[in-house]
Length: 491
Image (tube, rainbow, N blue to C red; front, side, top):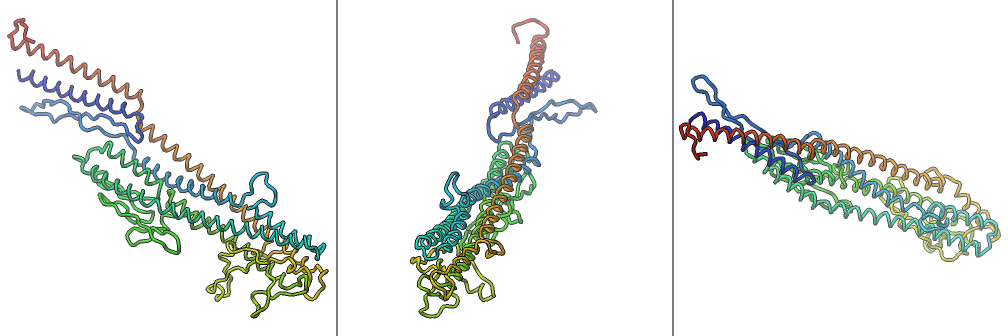
């Protein structure tokens, strides 16, 4: 009787283990289309045998908690690549918006607003027209008209760049609440995963944490450090703690130099986050590097054209024979013949012997209202002289902007911007392809394959049926034993 009871106990455990395995398969199938779900496998563990008189007697098998099929190295590589792809993607979006400001609309005329290159050509060409007939009022008016178009397009483009930068700054600041929500959730999941009895598999808890990590890595650059009992610590790219065990450290913001900076505690981590990745990294790169670079180029162009044209116009004689006094050498009450508003100057740079052109593009405008003040003639020459108009027309072919002609300088700037956009586009394409490849590898390993689950289902069903048959046989033997071999209704 003891032997039959032991056998019944063993078979009962086998039936329970097979049923648990079938439940695991059923759960996998039910979550086949659940995003982020990691398939689980059954674990059968032999119970410790009992030794009697030197003979070991088996105690059957038990189904322990299932194991999630995951590769932590692949998971970490995916989050790292997502950081890079998100950064280049958000930067590319900003660069495309920036580039559009310097790209004339298709099929437009050469004087379309925003086509600064054509504006430069038209402006200097107007002096060429004027030199053919220096007293012609229509040609004089054309100079002011083309000057107004050039100044308006440069200043409006600078305003658009500043607006884009402000929008990126606002967008970057808005990421903070999302980051803090995710780091807080990851810290809570850390605690739950580490509290799993016996350090067992976290299952769906780890799936959720991985999903949160994936979202976080698309927002900012992070480093991951695995701790005991499947815990996880997160830091900024340079090691500032964001999550440690069950504790999260909030990302905060504050203004510095007119733009949003990011802090963990009292540490400014803006530079770390800029180069670290995620959409925040891409936005900050565009905000702090790409747009300022474009503004600087535009400021240099505006400053050089404005000062050179103003200087020459003040050096010549207008329709009345008057010669102006340049701003830099003006005396009280002296009238200048400036065509463009004088660019702003900054004492800090001027004191060190340099020239600060910051803000020249945004401030550029035409201040001359009377075309008769255009100094087509040389100083002291009659109104019919065209020598100064020729000199101003020749500025188009002179290296007055950082050693280049105005049109070449602008053309090279636009070309460089286009190359940057193309490089980031190529980078983003490669990184996105890498993300897709890694995701496919993870899906192949951790995703639910219904064919595999069907095979496992058949295996466990057969095992359950076999155990049931043995259980039926043992039940018959027990009935016969109870009736001392006599056939009765006892079953």
